[in-house]
Image (cartoon, rainbow, N blue to C red):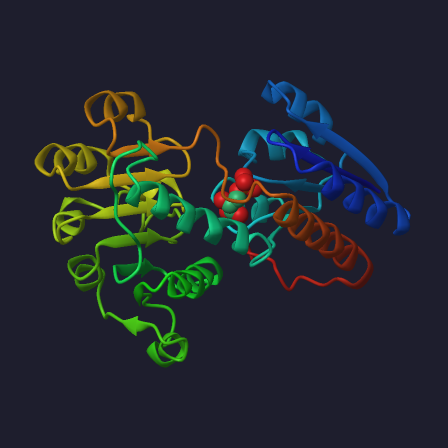
Length: 306
Ligand code: 3PG
């Protein structure tokens, strides 16, 4: 049984060691492909793999077609928009994620980006504080909930919108609930995005929503670049001097935005949200255990393509 860890953006070494130990202890063979610079290298490595652990690596139809022995792909992380789950299902390949395992790292980065925006990207000039400011959390999943907890520590007034979570569950955390995205955006200076990228959410953060935000608006995107309508972003940034956009990974029109709106936009060079040793270890261990549990006990608890 070959378990391949294929990560273009590598895990911390400690996480790789933990995964290796779990795989070895189960009596399986461990294989590692890191920082690969061509998809051909991935094709070659998956050829005889029975199980695959990935991060944001694109597991396309072509990759799956090359992986003739593959039974399971675990995306060590939350969002699985990088895996062709439908095609995997056709090929009877189970796809799982590891929800919650890297959430704290992402939540901390979201707050870090808020501070960075509030302090004018550390430009030495007088900025503002997060205390007393309004924060709207768009989707109250594992990351959204942690962002709420940390933001309350900063003294922010926290609210959320999530059509899939009962209002009383959110209110239990002392978080105000809005019944629509429109209301969330209209009532918050800071918006933190935590929606997944799918057909319904792509480009959904549009001009209609962003233009509703009050003065001193900042959107922090540690979710997926695809959920923000990039043309709408240009329009709102052109119209409003008080509008900032902070994103963990650059949008497709990053060059244009950085040139036109310096000091109002910031993008990480590589997706950084889950890039901590702790998150890597948590997600890596969970992924390896889920694979062992799947092969030994048929456990499909975290399958996302049932
Ligand atoms: C996730 O969906 O878990 C995060 O976006 C992390 O992605 P990464 O593993 O590529 O850093």
